[in-house]
Amino acid sequence: MNSHREALLKRVAAADERMRALLAYDRTNPLFSVNLTMQQLKVLMLLSRHDGIASAELTRRLGVSLATLSGIVDRLVTQGYVTRTEDQQDRRIRRIHLSPAGRKLLTEIADGGTQSQQRLLRRLDDETLGMLASVLERVIEAAAADIAEQATAENQAEDGPAQPSDRSAPTFPVTATEAAHPH
Image 1: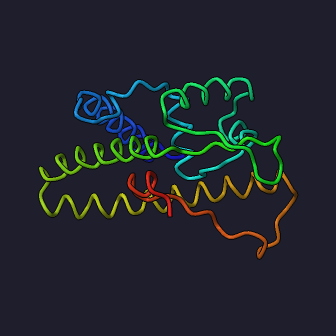
Image 2: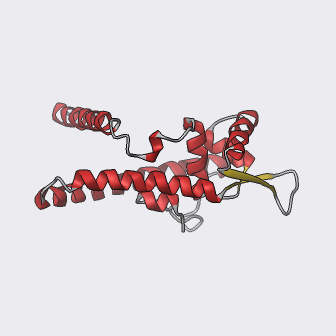
């Protein structure tokens, strides 16, 4: 990699770090008022895309043991954010579901982030907004390609090389609202 590109990558990383530091001061987002651990929030986010997922699959996606997941889910059940059910075909399997309260919480967090973002973006002129939109669209394309490559590599590791027609590319939420409200 050339030194100009490395300098640009460092500049982007530094700007991103400064932006995150500034956003950490915004206490209007409901994310700062919820009493959740990062692992609990990860579970809720995964359930927003995979509601009713089996406990074993959730442990794989989180990279934790079944005992660890059980404790996380127990606390989320106590807080009213998730429910557990038995699988209809196999009673040994426990399925984890996002409760209405859990879905509401994720919506509030996403909406709070959107409101903060809109406040910030309103401060930019039209030309800057246009440039930002173009750049973000390209970053989204790169992220989607990267995630699709990772998913393909995971699938190939699990069941050998896939035939071109075996799998379609995964789809991912594009906005925070889509993440909180899957189709």
